[in-house]
Amino acid sequence: MIPATFGLILFCTVEIFQAEAVCDEHAVVDKIFSNYNPDVRPVRDQSTPSVIKFQLFISSIVNINEQDETLSLLVWMHTTWKDEFLNWNMADTNQNCTSIKTRARKLWTPDAVFTNTIDITPIVVPDQQWLAITNEGIVSMTKTAFITVRCTMKIADFPFDTQRCPLQVTVWTYEYQDLQLTLSRPTTGLVDIFSNTSEFQTISLDVVPAQTSDENQTFSELHYTLVLKRFPEYYIFVIIIPTFLLTSLCIIGIFTPNSNINERNERVTLGLTTLLSMAVILNIVADQMPKSSEGLPLLVN
Image (cartoon, rainbow, N blue to C red; front, side, top):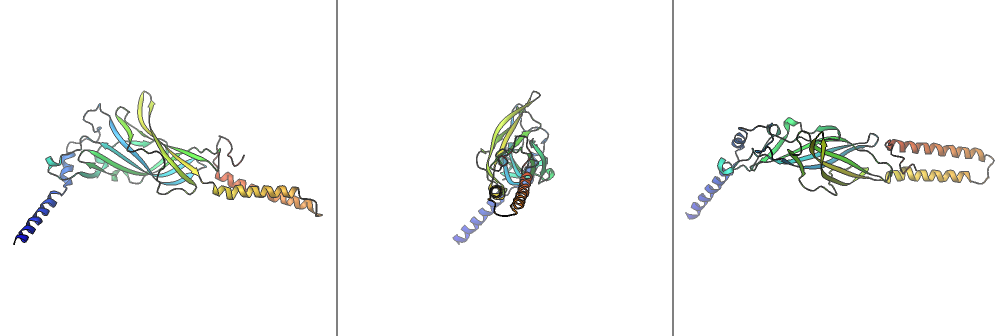
């Protein structure tokens, strides 16, 4: 009889605990958005700046166009900030929600954008963007986008070159005293990229906070630098070694002793064949190298 009674009490306790653990998101959403204005910066004291924690993740290096000097990336942009109007007390509301998820269009979001992009295509359209809110008012949002940025190619050491591509993130609307960009965590040194390119090795992704001024206005920025080092093996085996062999063959042919009655014709044929082969190799080099005004690459010198 006693074990049966104990089991009944345990069952009722578990049922009550599960009932109390249910999160009623409808009640929380109705409470926190009842008088919410998404067009106003979410601080009770407007003299207090909003701090936006930003983190950039490079998911994939899609393409590097050296002729157009562009870099195409698939990136994740994770932002976190505190909304002072979207917190709730679980004891007061009698709700067990530590966090909820809702559409981004329902609340204020920072307008952190890339300033040096040629093209940007969001993977998720803005109307379908979701975010998470904790009971302390901490908002977290992750955007995924396909971006193309300008990356000036330094070809002086081609094909043993290292490229540094800038990625600049800034706040488009608010000045520095209203909104400040900071890093969620340090991003210096080796970066993990899920899908890398076959021609370049990713060395690091460095970032420094910065401020820029424009007509007596100061804005907060984050300056990222993606460092890429080229794999030179392809150019060594396809261009450098064949060029060396052809040049050596041409020199040997010129200084070969007279032994045939038609040696002049043979030498002319060898010279023309060598020139034709060199023209093909130079055409390959010209197709691979960007057109730069900073001088000739190491491969041409």
